[in-house]
Image 1 (cartoon, rainbow, N blue to C red):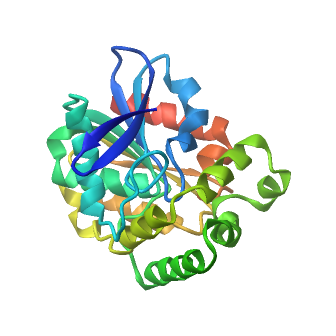
Image 2 (cartoon, rainbow, N blue to C red):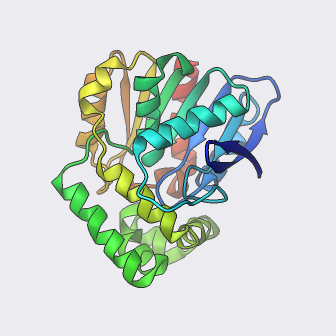
Length: 264
């Protein structure tokens, strides 16, 4: 990956796909990196120019001491675009990456041409904040391995976990290598998520992909987003948990391509 200076951090990024196609900027989930999108690249690369990056505290990007804020994540994304001389992008974000996309479309509507929000939410609540505190306590006490063991059943179905195929192992390895400062800083940021009452400001064509059995961002959270963004559409992948793009990539990819064909 290459790196670009954005404010006080170095942001790692990677290009795939066409040299001159429409630009898709893809943002990952908490405790992961740009690699969470590996299984999507093959179906996008012949039509789009794809920019993947590791956001603050994750992957190969700088992990300064936190806490972080969602506003920082949003401004880091804009700073990355500016440093690469990109005026507008079509945003695809999963989980925290979807939160960042919402913030961008609200704060910088002129920079976001379209949105695909995957397995995400727009508003923290008491349960979510307590869940953040619980994970942070585990990380502080024992590092990233025990928090993976604590949360893996939220990301994937049991059968997929037991199989431990290469796709599962790749995400596990990225997760446990996430810098502790980055994980603590990032989880602090999403605990303060509060975009729900501003979603009506989003002007970009929007599609929402949800997982039907996602315990982290339940289907009601996606329905809430869809009801507040004009002319948006919700697609549900039944029987899946939070990282459906990793567990059932063919199903997810078919829906992602259909969404992108509608809005780009």
